[in-house]
Length: 127
Image 1 (cartoon, one colour):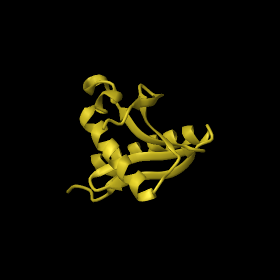
Image 2 (cartoon, rainbow, N blue to C red):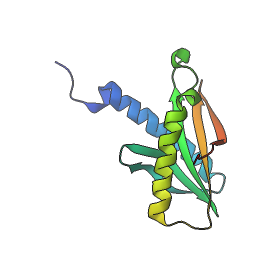
Image 3 (cartoon, rainbow, N blue to C red):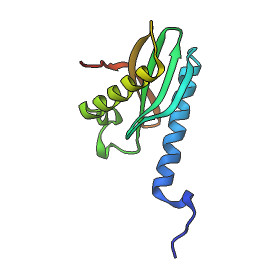
Image 4 (cartoon, rainbow, N blue to C red):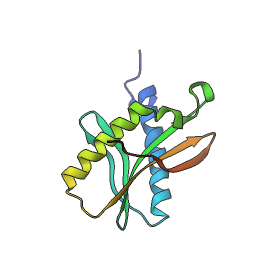
């Protein structure tokens, strides 16, 4: 009989691992003087993993990892469609927060072969 224990479920393990990588990314930003504004902020079906701020700079962060090269480098999954979803969610966050005099950027943080890679300003919001 299958176990009802969530920890043994593959999806639960992926979520737990993903949270651990998000925690590491958050620590990276905290160590550089950023504050965490939000984690796993949702706008409908769209989600932003981390939103961090340092003075007048607000950064929307996508965190990706991969256990093998089978699906390529994790940054490759931040394709145009994913970027468009992140941009739409960021626009909604900005509108709801009524932010002014703030600079914005999109970062990607990947975990690949045991190492964290940081891609600041990985893509720009398109009109």
